[in-house]
Length: 153
Image 1 (cartoon, rainbow, N blue to C red):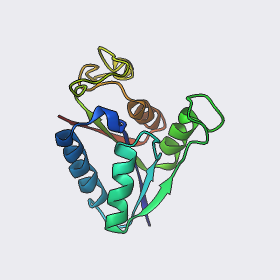
Image 2: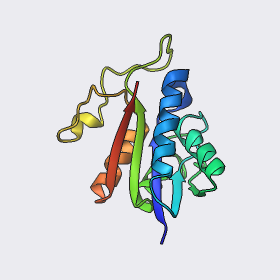
Image 3: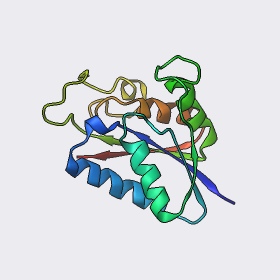
């Protein structure tokens, strides 16, 4: 019987070479942790963890179940919110791969803390930068799934 492993996390713009390599190492470890894994992920159009996971799964010959958003918006028809909920529901366990800090020169929207973790009992809201992947992990927790956060950098 296959284990469906959801892997989610930051987009490419949050990584530098060092943290990307560390994230890839984490993902490789997850995907080689047991036999008969099926990767469940979301093919973020901005690259990052979703794409790293797909590339590594391809190299390892691991089956994939990719939840591609139909619209590039949170609430649109099968947008990021619906896609992320689908990942949480379909996965037996979810791994959230995140960076600790914004990369030098980052020009996107900045948050002082992860407001998702601020709502999670026992979590450190300053342990990583905000991510929709963290929201997905929270939804999986609410569904009773096993969720593990992996912070790189």
